[in-house]
Length: 262
Length: 323
Image (cartoon, rainbow over all chains, first blue to last red; front, side):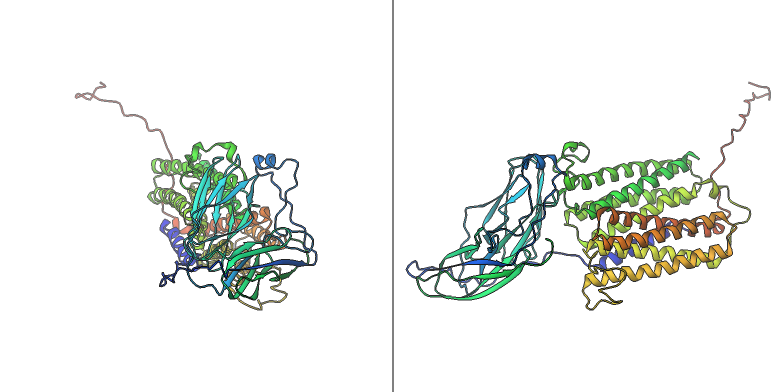
């Protein structure tokens, strides 16, 4: 049997593997003709506010075992850290990303101030947040251990950056609107660390607080579709119409808690 | 003999490397070290041990073990080059060295490209090829092979069925690797049934590749049964065939059991990794049986030269007298 026969299966493996498909980031959409810059008249700007409710008792958030990294254990000494899947006061759901899904026209310049995204005590802070396309995100490692910051978008470019030094800062900017809106982040060193960022081409988004409330100010009067996204419970939408200077406070969503363990 | 022992050591180290690599995927640590060939900016070999935490322990540990196996393979290739009179064996040594170098590159590329399924699967596939090369070198340097036999088994059917079985096992390994690297390990959540029946009620790419792996298991089971049955029926008096056939059946049973428990345990890390390692050992065992069935085709190939100290001829002067 000739040694070269060993090469044949290897070549075949490449062929089979190539057919296995692979995940490549979708190319960024071609630049569309630039829409005119939106101007929001303060005299007519409205506010949409509401509350995200949770019906039923959610599963308990899974406890986090940090023994894989002594630095994380030390940073959480005395605490019993858990995942942040279901947070909120009774009957309320926090960490829900609420945003205007449709109805917006015009372009909105991205803020130049960076959003600070911190890794502290081996947790991401905040767990859910939103940025505009083109807005810098300043990722900070506040821990005395290594982290990698790994973003997994579908439309934007995936990245995975090493942050071995405490105090290290890395800046990243998402350059295009994300098709799925919300991009997951994770740390591959500490498997329990995960976070989510909504990337939109406008500033009309918010994250619900522990009491489930949110507020999206400075909205031009008109008809919009609001969406509320939760990392486990999916997305719900709501049609709202706001009049000039209206402060709408009943844009409420209700999610149902799933049965079983988290 | 020492070359054979060293070759076996390299094979054993490669099993350890396959386990380490399996753990990387099973623990989701493939991107725990974002850069390559450095590790968080450090040279691979100077990365501080205190930072081997979490996923880094698995990924960087895998890189270190891989480097060790690469170094062992350099020695093996050089030793074969120096000691082996059989030219094809020297080529095999460098084929193994080439394979392990290419493995390193594939491993780096898959990290830098965020673990694309095709590259990760190729990395897994080449790992098996490299392992098979080390197993083959171990076999070809063994006394049982080099000393030969006056009555090698010449069974065309055995050659065909064992070679086919080995190829089928390798294909199943590739399908399994594709399944792992496309997150399809639990695409069908029950076992032995498929969503409560025999066929999936709907098809997605992940369900399809998972189902293919299960069908492949049935095919491989039949192939191994045919091979082992042929050996036990026709060559039960040949221990060099009977033993690997028996071991092959044992590995098959273990692999099926592990596969079931992978599903039932929702991909427990240890069970998942053991399933990967057992797959490699099943492939290696089938390869040994196949090569031994082809032993007769190697008749006439010069064995390893027996080093005999020849007496030194005395130097004679012009007159023929001793100098």
